[in-house]
Figure 1 (cartoon, rainbow, N blue to C red):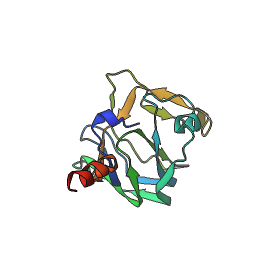
Figure 2 (cartoon, rainbow, N blue to C red):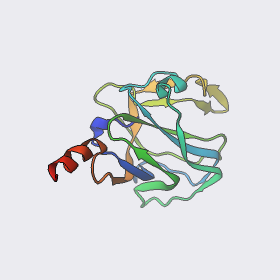
Figure 3 (cartoon, one colour):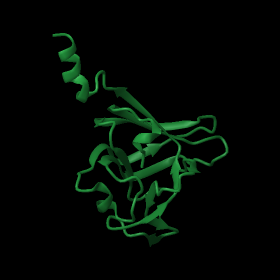
Length: 171
C-alpha cells in the first residue's frame, strides 16, 4: 500500500519499479500468470482480507503476462515494468498495489524496509516450499514491511477541484 501522505501526487501512473540493491539476491527466471493491479482505497492500514481492502472498489489490471521472463544483473538497483494500461491516480486516496503470479522458477527478491509508522502496508499469501500459506484471494498475512518502490507518474496539470476557481478568476 502506498499512502497519499507518502507524497504521491495525482496523475497518470505508467511504470512501476522495485529497488533490488547490490546486497540482495535477485534471481533471473520467470513468473507464470503474472499481473499487477492498482486500486484506490480509503484505508490507511491493510486488513487480512484482500477484497475487504478494496472497500467496494474494483482493482484495475495495469500489467499482465502469461509468463514474465526476468533478467537481472547485480549492478542494477531498480527493476520495473511499463504498464499495458496507465492508471489515473486521484492523489487524494491511498493506493493498493497488488502483484500476483501463479508459479515461478525461483525468480524474484526485491528488498523491503520496515514501516516506522506501524501500519500494515503489505499483505501476502502463496506457497512456501510447496506449502500454501495465507488464503488468497480470501485472506493473507499483514506486515509492516513494504518494498522500496519507484513510480513513473505524469502529474495532473490542474487539480480538478481548482478548475472552477481558475475560471472565475479570469472572468
